Image 1 (cartoon, helix red, strand yellow):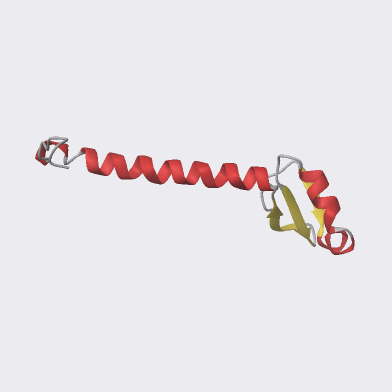
Image 2 (image 1 turned 45 degrees about the vertical axis):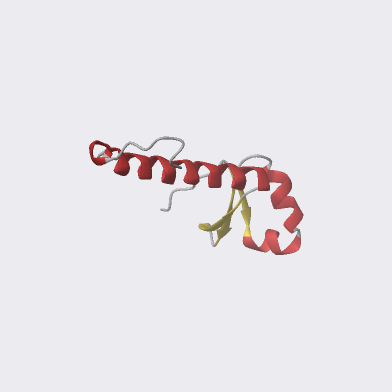
Length: 83
């Protein structure tokens, strides 16, 4: 059995009939769309999607900073005037 990553669900047939209902159910959480009682996808609100994208961007920046911090000892000092 597939793991459901949401407390809210909607059948794909119900989604076709009333898509707005899925967004109403979602609120600030995801809604799993079921097809034959198996997860076919997820619907998320704009607010949740923005939060997810912010988290991914933060992770990317953190990973890049970690990679660069290992070469910090080879960095050159530059004065503000030189910039």
